[in-house]
Image (cartoon, rainbow over all chains, first blue to last red; front, side):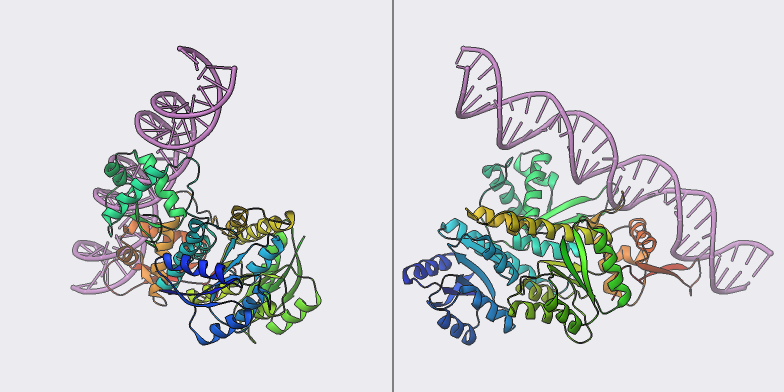
Length: 231
Length: 231
DNA sequence: ACGATTTCGTTCATTCTGTTCACCCGGAAG
DNA sequence: CTTCCGGGTGAACAGAATGAACGAAATCGT
């Protein structure tokens, strides 16, 4: 469970955020604060993994909380929530290690995507203790900055997507090659591969070569670092 | 021009990084430091956009510099350069707003990719003053996904390459023969050898004969003197 | 010195990948 | 009704990556 602190000056909004968070599997709200002062107190006393941080607070700017966390050497991550559209704010947030940034107003789908993205990022960090190659670091960053899984890119169909994902989940924990997925779904290998590559790009499946027989090795796709996401 | 400060305790490495940076269009080296102390001084006195920060410094840990920058509210960005493979380090770096992370040793191609990625990110922030929609914020974050296109010669696969390298690192400081690497990775001896020879060619592993039993001696490969910025 | 032994280093058939391009289908415009 | 367009799919293809097989090379034991 990822422990979340909700910070927003307006009680109604804070409550909405709390409800949203509880609806996302794997997350639990550990506290709610309406001022920077209260937030800091709660952050010191409780073990918080993620702060849902409204940047517009009555007593202090939200980023000041982020800065204080960094100064203190805390490992707590920050998801910034703001209606401020100044791009300089985005820049400052990035520099302060804010990993996700959500503009108000937002839908539950957008909110869940951000939380899921954070969960995937976190899972990667917890599952491995060391990185062997640069491309593994790149994958962590890709997960972190990756676009939401909400809308599929052009050329991909939601129904086919669900079909491919279902085939892969059914075979778990074994992996499948593109050709095998094609055989199980009735699609062509090319199409299966198209969707599998998309999943790999989104860090939702992992790719590894499958050696053994003669000839070029197959690429094996298996349900990846996270099982979180759309069903 | 993006003004860069190069920080590395080893003068030779620092010089190499300086030369690399100068080779990338749009970037200029504004200073070189060999200690955290010098780095902090230069950061205070000169207008620096990006710090090429080695995390392993004699007087302080590199991330302490990043932390100090954040505490001071500086807008200077950080590209971490380290041979440390602990994933916790990646996490801390991310939390401190480190936007790019490069593992030593690296080639010029990988290095240039990271700088180019940073330049793109920066351009987005400078060109727009406001963001209208969430997806624009997402795009800014997406730009931060550095995908190093470290190009291997034809006939070699990146994933297999990582696998072989990981096996070799795991056995360190002991060396391995081609057949042993094959056994540990699931590949054939021929394939293992192909990649090991590539590594030897790139001076990233050393080859030495292993005598003892009857028959032709085995060739032992061991992680060796690396290119730019070995531990 | 010479055969026995074991690995090396190379060649080449094999199998899968990754990409291109034509097709098909459904909807919008004429 | 026909034509056009644009997204989604798969057949075909060039070639990329692997491993089996084999002669050559290097060491050890006698």
